[in-house]
Length: 142
Image 1 (cartoon, one colour):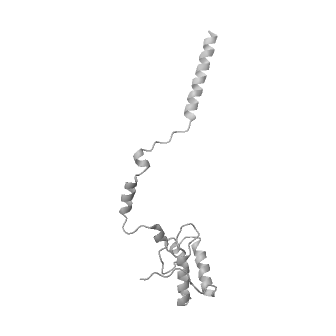
Image 2 (cartoon, helix red, strand yellow):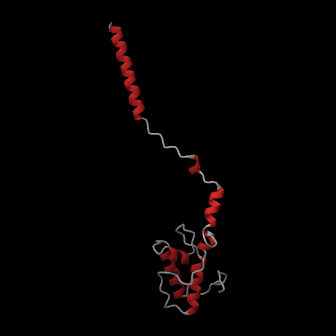
Image 3 (cartoon, one colour):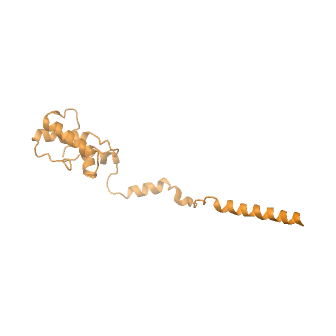
């Protein structure tokens, strides 16, 4: 009789351990329906075609800006202002956004990288360290 009680105790102990392990396992992630996991290219193309105008992120990030937000250029002569604007539209911001300095200032005036770079550029143009924009991007016609 003691053997049966001992055997029953071992079986109950193993059953309790199995339940504890089962409840301690991490929950399974919810399965994603296959229809939502990967949109087919047809859906993406239709969605993009509904956006008015040309969608080209490189063109947007390189769009010419006639002014650089957050910077006072009133003390510059017209030729210096032109040099400053051409440099700001030619140089890329190094924050990782991919915009030119002028575009980054337009679309994100809170960027901690573009403002100091634009201020250094302005100072260089103002003091005469930069006197020419030869070879840089020209203002587009129009």
